[in-house]
Length: 208
Image (cartoon, rainbow, N blue to C red):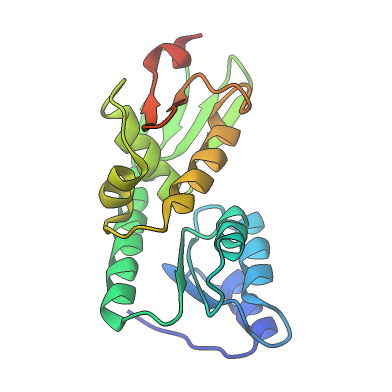
């Protein structure tokens, strides 16, 4: 695996846009162009790009901002090398799952063409694409219909680690997922919130 290191934000952005990297690890405090700006611009053009944000800022607001801009994971300094390695392995597993899925072509009974994470519904003229983490999150929930999962359970199953304080990682990805698959993200019928517990996949919501 080839690793590229770039300390200048503007050059890092150009590299990220011009090349197909399995994973981007972005420090927020980069000169010229911040890591947050890189994350936002890359996510706009490459929805399936895996991104981990690193920052010395530890406030909840900063974590939420990074995730809402499209980061798949977020780590605050100081952190151990072993923890970073675990997060990297987790993201690379998701990339592999998505790459395998993208080689699968299925024509469903309702006429929808499914090419991995890309769903093209000719009848409704809708196209839905899931980024790597969102794809695995949806797959996990849909594999256990009507089963309620807490945020910590989803962190362990989808992200692959057990750490408190990262619940907003789940919240942000659920919100992004709903924006793509729900008819009305403000009143979700497919991925539902069970207040005080967590989230569940409602198969009836898909059929409506």
